[in-house]
Image 1 (cartoon, protein in one colour):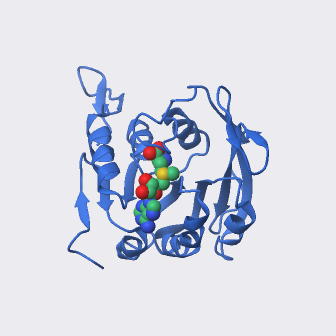
Image 2 (image 1 turned 90 degrees about the vertical axis):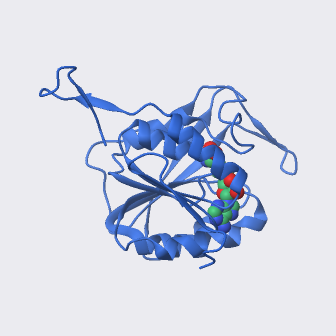
Length: 229
Ligand SMILES: C[S@@+](CC[C@H](N)C(=O)[O-])C[C@H]1O[C@@H](n2cnc3c(N)ncnc32)[C@H](O)[C@@H]1O
C-alpha cells in the first residue's frame, strides 16, 4: 500500500474516511467488519474494469449475511452485472427514479429518468419485511450536484438505508463528496468511506463533520435525548 499519499481521517466518531485508491485500501480493512456496501461508482466505460477487483476486495470485509447496493449506469449494464463475484447472489434491481430530471443519452436517443440500483447478497437471501423497489429523487436537476459533478441526492441514500435495514457498518469505496456518509451519520450508522480524489475527499470530510449528530430518546437524560456515539 502506498502509505505516502494515503490519508486516514476520523472527522466524527463512528466515521473513518480514507483518501486513496480503494483497490489498495480495501484489503487493509478488518475482515468481516462491514454489514453493507452502499456505493455509486463512476459509470464511464473506462472505470468498469475497476468494479470486479473492487467487489472482490469488498468481499473480504463484508460479513456473511451482508449486502451490496450499487447505483450503476445503464450504458454498460451487462459488463457491470458480470463484474460481481460469483459467490454473491443477485437479489434485485431497484429503480432510482428522478422525477424532475432526465439525462439525454445521445448515442442511444434515450431520455433516461431512472438508474438501476443493483442489490447483491453474501449468504443473504431474503429481506425480513416486504420492500418496495422504487426509490424516488425529488430534488430536481441540481440536487446532489452542489458538492460533486456526479453527486447523488442525499435523501435517496437515506431512504435506501432506512428501508433496507442495511445494518450498523456501511462501506462506500467510491464515496465522492460523501453523500452516503452523511446519510449514514444522520441515520446513526457507522461509515467507512474511500475516495481517490483529494478535492472530493476534503469536501466529504467537511460535509460529514458539519452534519448534526443524530439524537435518540434517552429516559435517563433530562433532555430526553442522547447522541448515538
Ligand atoms: C459517481 S462518484 C460518487 C459520487 C457520490 N455518490 C456523491 O454523491 O458525491 C464516484 C467517485 O469514485 C471516485 N473514484 C474513482 N476511482 C476510484 C478508486 N480507484 N478509489 C477510490 N475512489 C475512486 C471518483 O473520484 C468519484 O468521486
